[in-house]
Image (cartoon, rainbow over all chains, first blue to last red; front, side):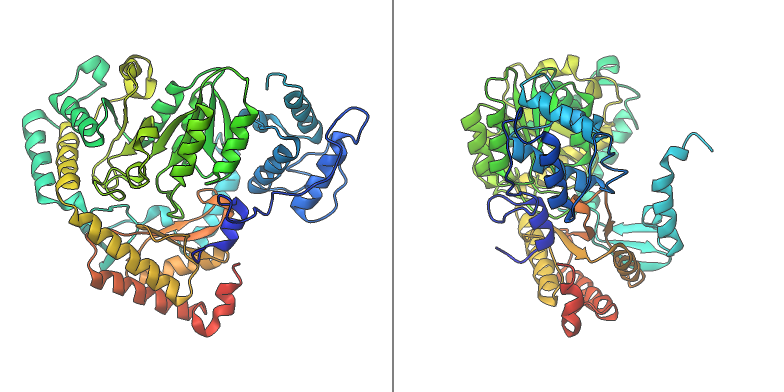
Length: 115
Length: 407
């Protein structure tokens, strides 16, 4: 690894050479109904991305209430995508404001509904 | 309250900069003397941030061609090629680009930005998927918004993440277009194109490479990263610009796609804007000849790039991941970045102060771009100025902890 902007590379995760900081090893029930609710998984992921425990409700505003900047949001979204093995298209991300919006997006994409 | 009050957060950030006596958006050169020097407030200043990779802006042959074409054909085309017709130069330039890349088709746009807007909004549409490297240039993001396809970001320079996201789309109808850049404009790192091409082949996607910063810079013949990585056959579309290594303005796309020319009647950023003026076309054609016939330009460029990169790295500055004509130096915070930039400028060195949101992952950078036209002495002067300012701000070996504190 040549010397470089280590802090940048860690955050953006160059190909296979370094583990991105936001690629999180999370445990949880990914099977949906009857298991751990999506909201609990999301809370765990928030806590790991922000480095502190968070209380979230359906109406929690991701940017306003949790104080995330745009980069934080994008890293958080990538962590959610890894966890559920989905990709959230950019226009869909733009529509997400609250935790409830995010839960709906995850549910739609997991069920294969059009984004 | 005015209609622009919605941008008050951006205005506040800009005003804060100006309170520091720094206005990077309002640097006014009294005159530009050469590809590598300008006069600023009466002071001779080294230009180390103008993407003038081959130094062709003052090439006597390019200037002569531009003057000749302007005299014989006028200052402008006053409209689009669709409405006002093609000038001979437009067609010659497209033929020259196709020939240079060994492709069947080429299309010229009025800027590199418009080339991305046009191509990305036209190649994919509703029901298709555009797969963008997360660190893509604004013109790529804007092009994706102009079109109707789904847009999915993958982690910067991660073929694995790209593969994972394409695999998730298995069974979904529609085309997929992967978009990467030859050299990324902020950190100067290249795309892992061999691996990206392998993902493309395995998943049946199309691949577009934006060679804006790598045309004339990488590859034995100067065709860019696709040539250097030996994967030109896997690249379906190459987009680029005339405004860096070719020293003028304009953009292009080349391809072997058999029905490529349909773009001329459906691609709005091509159809509804004025075409390039004859003088610009003529100097660009001549610059392309220089790229093909003067390989020493690339040798000198890379010599200078290595000298600057190695020099800055040896002083203990945090530089980008590889030595390329874009050399970025990381700053620990915004205030240091601003003060450092201002002190460099006052010492006679111009480069780019790159602040979020223009930079990836919110990093603050002093971004330099090296030219083949820089002399070794100019690079050494630049290094000496960096060392002096770095010492005054407590950055260098005597106080590595502060620089190390960035990490």
